[in-house]
Length: 464
Image 1 (tube, one colour):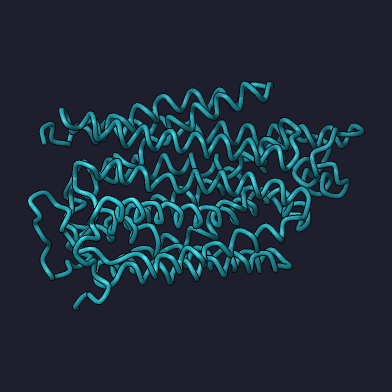
Image 2 (image 1 turned 30 degrees about the vertical axis):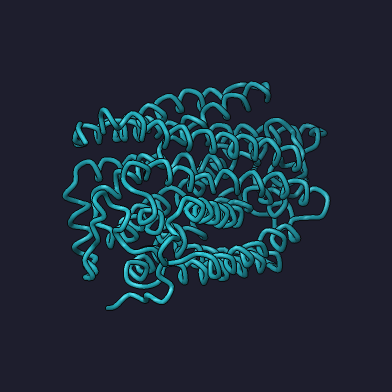
């Protein structure tokens, strides 16, 4: 099937100014998509109050409801990206997820919000794998990890924007206007992408200027190449397992701060944005730049850097969930976030080095399929489930959900205030310790993730 070429990049557009704009716009698009993806974490507590949801339902809204179509549809859309115009696919995807995000603000029941979140996932499925393929054709192998790490600044920037603005809005205006505000900017970015970006020649950025063949490899061919690589298999396992813990923990951080430390929505959003945003930016840049620098002498650093980051991040984040002073906990969460975000650039640099140019969108989508289905899909649901179970066990005055929801004293169903009366205090304590123990339990799997990164280094060639 022939690729559309009307928008192929013309001579001269590979100049540094165009590459800078190209990467900047993709970062902004990624940030916009991530605002729409994680805004449920910022407004989740308010939605929980209005709709009287359980932690498991909240975890489903932030996790599986989004990731099920986002993960599954990413692969067939990536197959289109390996064949057709990638700029067009991204522009259409942005319009779809932006509209669905705005519709979330109109939901009157849990099932409606669930359906709209599914729609957000469908729209965003066409973005990241396609963008990875575009970046790989603009930046050569020796700059690719850095470029991918810069692109990965989108999520922390999105968290910063969504958490800082969303936290203030939900506290002063309610949760519904938040969805309207965060959904609309995506339409502007989609238009800019359509007007200003051009389709690069596939394979032109490879060393020696080698171009890829016109034939698009089959899905079976791509998966065969990937699964034959032991380095890829180990990196994939490490990424998916690490995402299970990171996505789950990140989604519930604002909820954790309101319940355990009594923060208001605006303050919790501010802290969440600074921790995940600033920490994510620092970690992504540290991982990508250090991997490109160190790999000039030994390519195994592409696996060692995320391995060390994950190994260092676990004790930091586990300790954060055991301290009672919030400034100490926030400092530990920030340090852990920096360490845990060193994986992105090095991981995808390894993936793109294994496959040829017309396989890259599919290869990226395959990684995201497992990473998001296991990580974003199951991670938040697992924490929500464990939180409900721990709270139920810790509450000794009857049925936890019914008793605490009925009194309005349950920390999961009320704006954070000082508990009043024995029942209110019991509900608050059960809810706070339930989410704490759930977060601590899930963080343990980070050790498992680190082991797989170290194992991957054994299958990466030392030289260049």
